[in-house]
Image (cartoon, rainbow, N blue to C red; front, side):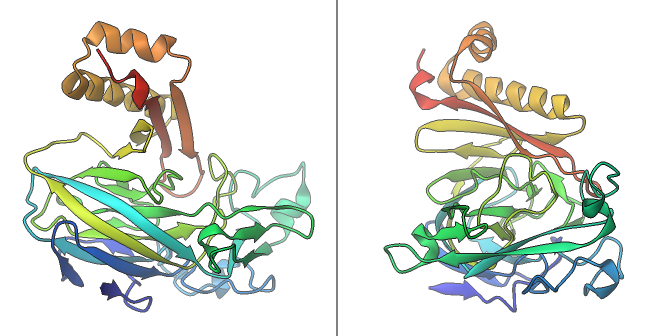
Length: 321
């Protein structure tokens, strides 16, 4: 199986000018060994998020949130859709979260001065499950609090049309740093393609994350991700779409949050109309009345240029007309 090693997975931009590290055929599985978002800086609680001590933070934007790629998919061209299936994620034996001055929404808090007056790094131990790996392992938040590891890929996408986008704050229809917990094992992700080969990249795996990634970092970790790519010829998608076993999700990123929610819902309606035979009236009324229609707020971080990421989700059992 072809693989991008961890040391190769240290790119910090989605750049269509980069030489592909792998060339794969449709349906061919490959692996990317990812760094965590700090490129290995955070190892102990003593490793603080002080910008002056962090490698790459002397640049603007910082060289953080590394990705592996590009991967060139044979046969895919501009105007096609890329289908990304995440087959497996095995995370490292620990993850971390870091808070402190000028980090996140409470980085200048006077209500809780400890959040804005000092840097804190928490290291979470991972223990394997019955498989002997972290596939079904446990994250230990403290001695008393723990939960199942629920990994996903935080940053993934194809290279955008003309611009070069950083992996730390780049976002668009092509993907980017979106931190969508549904970018995980067993789900299929649909992306528009702008260049021959699609030029796919991924990185920034999280061992777990709550809605919004409120502090600006989640349970950041290294991982090995197994992926396969397929294509839909001549299929145009307006923005990232996700197909789960039992539901479909339309994704959009924007500010303010209500704009992301509204456009994600518009795009879900378009999906219903163009592919499932709904009339515009029925699609419009369905998202307002269906008790199982959901809005997911995946990422709502006040960091750099990041927009807020929302997903409009509908169970597949309603995809009948």
